Length: 303
Image (cartoon, rainbow, N blue to C red; front, side, top):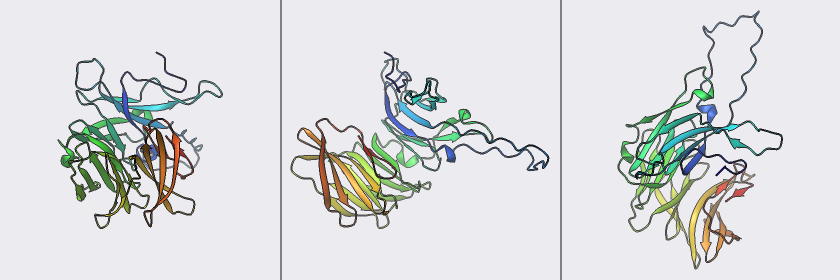
């Protein structure tokens, strides 16, 4: 089956994806000896690289013949005026992950690598970009030693770096929440809860708070400085919380959005991030909400 307009396939089911911070990954080309010829014509600036995305997935541990892989793909030039954006059919790079399928990923915002969550734990995959080489020279190498504290911890259903990349949080299928300083991996918060799975988590833009949604119960707000839970955001009758995202408004204040299913309806709930009180709720769909994101300027919600 051919991909839909604007779509692309790479031979395996895709479970996770994230855009890459290329400005922090691709190294600028230095001059050969640091000497500039005053009589030489100024070199034309290189065109910016196309946006790129990391994709992870595969066929799992069985002998389905479907590979498990991590792929880097670039946005292809539009084939014609008005054509929808699409990824190039040929990936920039493909890293096989043997019998382990990457189910979740978090790309470090400052280019430290891609954290992948596999069924048995997490691994960090780091970039190799030779100086002066173009974006299509990007290579990924698995770092076996970087995440010792996340080895053999089981599947992590939620993984995220804070906006500046100084904190890493993971939430397990077994209910275990772990929060670390990055890159030293000193523990900030550890909250085992065998009764529920972690479904989603989100950092505030100022890195003061972390909100965690579980498979049941309220959303919990953690203060990252004191390492203490400071609020529980209760559900109304029949609500099941799903995703959570902080958003920054035009006046630099923040609001927290939480998705929920209530009966046959999907809804978005907003919360004040000072009093942690519910300030709005709107039914938006009669389908399950399977993904959720907020635009960087906080003006658009996507699901």
